[in-house]
Length: 303
Image (cartoon, rainbow, N blue to C red; front, side):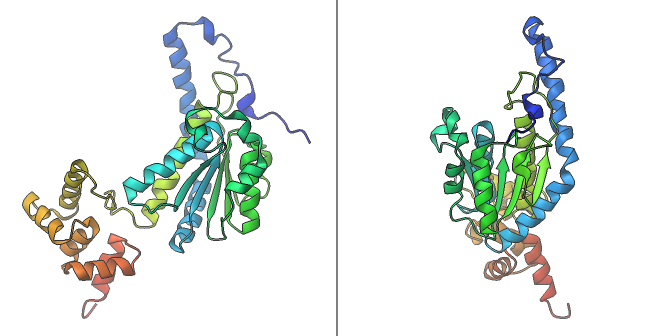
C-alpha cells in the first residue's frame, strides 16, 4: 500500500538556488528554517506533557523508557539516554536508546538496517507493560521503528511516535502521536537538519521534565549528580550552598558527614535531621528532596 510523500521529502521552494548564493546567505536560510523547529515543538507541548505524565507514573513503578530510531533519529535517542546517567545518577537500563544497526551505526551509516521491522521487534524484546516506547522517525515510515512499536503494543507498553509527517503510517495505534510540522528541508530529504533539531528539542524537554517529575532535581538544582571527579566534587559543594545558604566550610563539612551524598546533606541541613534519618526520608519518598522534606515536616509532633 503506497502512502503520500512525507513533507520532509518534498523540495523546499525557497532554497532551490541554495548552491548559487553567497555562503552567508546559505547560513541565513538554514538559520531561518531552524526557527521552524522551535515553533513545531511548542505546538505539541500539551501532548508531550501527557507523555511525561505517563512515563513518570511507569518510571515510579520501576518501568523504563526506550527510544527507537534509525540514522540521525537513532543517534539522537542514544545521545539523550546516555547523557541522563551522569547528570541524574540514573541507573543503567532506565532510559535506553536503540538504533537500527546497533553500535556500529552510531559512527557509520548502516542505511539498510532501518528497513528491517524484524530487527526492531528483536530489539524490543523484553519490554513490558510498565515501559514507554518512543519511536523516532522523521518520515513516520521507518520499518525498524514500526517493528519496535508493534512489539511494544503487544507487550502492553505505552507507545509514542515522534515524526514530522502528519500522515505518518506508523502513527496508527500509538497512544500518543507527536507531529512536528517542520516541513521540507533546506537540502531536500536531509532530515538531520530541522526535523532532527526538532526531535532533539523534544527529547531534551521530555527527559528533563521526566527527571524533574520523579524527583531527580530540587528546584532547578542538579542534586542527583554523582561526584566522580574533582570538577563534580566542587559542583556538589556549590549546589549544596545554593540549596541551603551554608558557607563553603560548613558545606564541605556537611558533605563529609553525609558520606558525599548531596541529597542527604540537603535534607540534613533543611530538615534539621541527622544523616540516617535523611536517608530514611529519601528512601520513603523515592529519593525526592522536596518529598523528603515534606515527609519530615509531616512527621514532626503536632504537625
